[in-house]
Length: 340
Image (cartoon, rainbow, N blue to C red):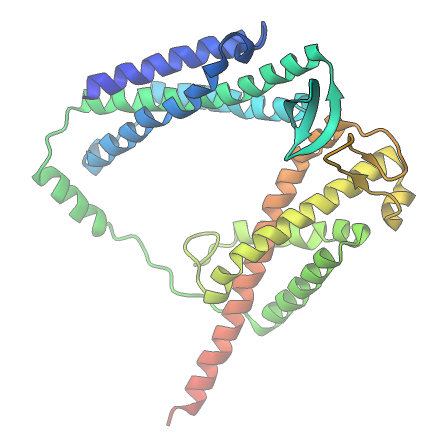
């Protein structure tokens, strides 16, 4: 079975490479309508590789150097291709409706396409996905080859390895408490940021970049227990994850629109919120003053927008953890004071 999965992964990788190369010459979906089937075929060998790798004793789970180098190259190419697709794809996907071709995003028309542009954008889509197929199939192939070469003997080796892993002696971090001043500051900034995001005022949302990015950096640099260094340390921090994620999406969207209006209509209109980007399911997107919408520029702003989304989520959730630690500290002190 391992030989079968190695051959399966090799065939998927070769097919992905051929389709990816074809996108530079034309639209593979026009020539082979079922080409997106590879989007499903990459997963069986990848899952098989993970399952085989987990059966190996911990001491034999060595990733070959050629796999690390090759995976790094393919991964870097896939990341670069994602950034390029963000710009070339203009933030949408090609669709045909009533004999016309449109560039659409979640049912919203960005602009109308010519027939040649439609097939070109389909090629961009396949190129984007096929770079991911290359990465998944290459990693699956490399891991399966590494596992096959290891030729492990199962049984007591796995048991001993698991016991050694459990007794690895890694230090367990005790829950940290937040100083009262830092906790109160976190509450103040968190409440202010949530109110600003919900209100939707463009300039204030843009100014939220500074505290949210600062808290995100602090979260990544501090070596304390809990999010994001490990599992959540407080119930409040854990419960805030879902609302913080949606708040971060809304915040990123508002800041992205603020930057777009500032670039194409002027900073004054952006600051006062006089103009907005109007999306419709019936007509192409445009500014509220009727100005033409630049889909490629809007898509390019998605790159810093993604970074803002990550920073916003990290910053808000870290503040939630700080608030939880502060309340936990109050609770512990009250219990200690009530003890006889």
